[in-house]
Length: 272
Image 1 (cartoon, rainbow, N blue to C red):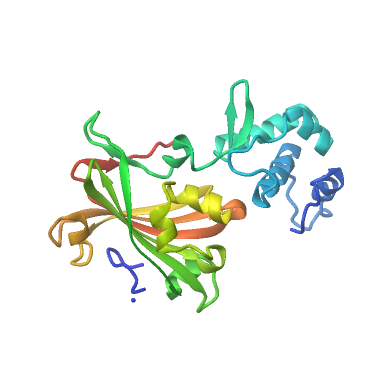
Image 2 (cartoon, rainbow, N blue to C red; image 1 turned 45 degrees about the horizontal axis):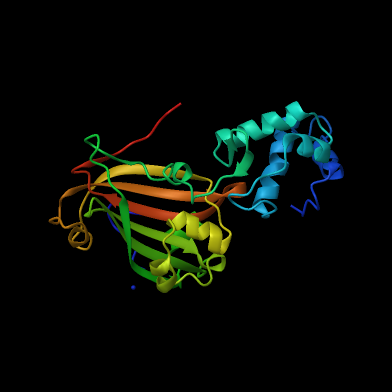
């Protein structure tokens, strides 16, 4: 997508993941076929992700205990713990002291704000983000969007434009493109009526969990189309954030372009 311009848009089932499935996943290719050894805990991690992907445990639900999972996969409890630890570090699972391990959900603030990196310049200045949906339409995917979402040419996408205000001040204009086959029934009326965050709505209504994203940032000038939506003059410097969000199995489920007014807010990230 050209800087500052919005495209014109007017595994086999694992059965119960029983030990026989694990045995098949352990089977190594003969030497010389380029197979790489996968530690046992990584194989367990993959089976857990597949269970999450097919909805065996819903977002916000408690997953079985490490003892039960160890019995299910016929491995040690330590192996299961290491797999669960990695999924918790990747924010797919959440550990709660004394309660167990739960599937992460975008209805929880600590998960939701992993994907909203906007922070106030002055401490104490931050307020509740207010979302206003400006439009929601279905159309044929522009070529660049189709490639990013791994769609065939001419497939349908849902496009959403929303305004995000901080302390009642328009701060972000988001344009989203979603694969139409996964978001049948997503309408302006549904978006407007929902009090949930967008990713929470996608999760609960359409069974699509966004688990990670890739982003690119650049500085752009506000276009005549975008400037009035942010209450600024055309040409005002903005931060453009292009994102592709993925569900389980690294399947792209969203292309998003955010245009940020950074007069009082900045984009924050932590590297480790």
